[in-house]
Length: 275
Image (cartoon, rainbow, N blue to C red; front, side, top):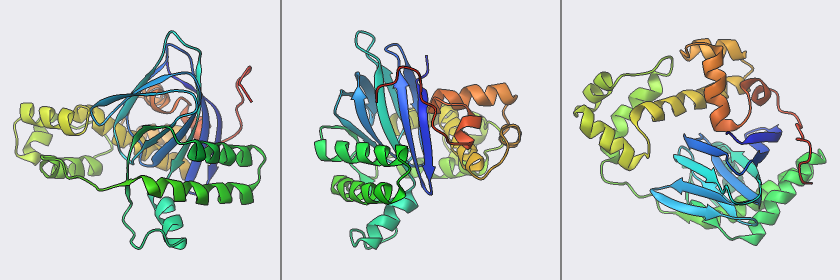
């Protein structure tokens, strides 16, 4: 079962969602083009990122860097989980960092990602959410500036894992071929490695197979096109999905909402959701 997005808001390069996950729900391995910062309101979430399993419980914060492959499952013995997630574009975070003197360059910083106990950041995420509910952009901007300051204390030094450079031409090729699935024959030729080595490298360094990672790149492009107002059926056709139903199902598994609702943010309060 896929978690469901109850509320969804968009403000420039920032999106905010309130998501509910039943105790038997899960997110498959996926990624986002943005930083993803969440406040866990209730329930337990078992997270898999960077080859580690982490647990996020009520009152904790989770942080993911752009294009970090992550997956999660929700504790079947506990209560339903709810969390508020912020999706912050790299340019947005860098812009706020530079404007306030926290960053001196335009390179997106690498944050320490995972699950953390950080009451101050947790409360700031709730403040951003409340500002969106109240339609108060001044309060939302204030909260986001404070969130940026808090996130930049989580900066980490980017580590070039062995083999990452070897995959660079393959990943770059994938980015240019988003209109249809790509084959292992082609990817192994681009990377000048055999198929077995390519698969092993992807699973070790990225966390998923080449095909699954390419699908995530296609879904990232889908979100970009939907934000620009491209119709759902045109996005599905442009990105080479078998049909619109295939596209909708793949999209919902990652976002917990249909492409149409993603394209048109609105408050979608689920009956019985906690206030």
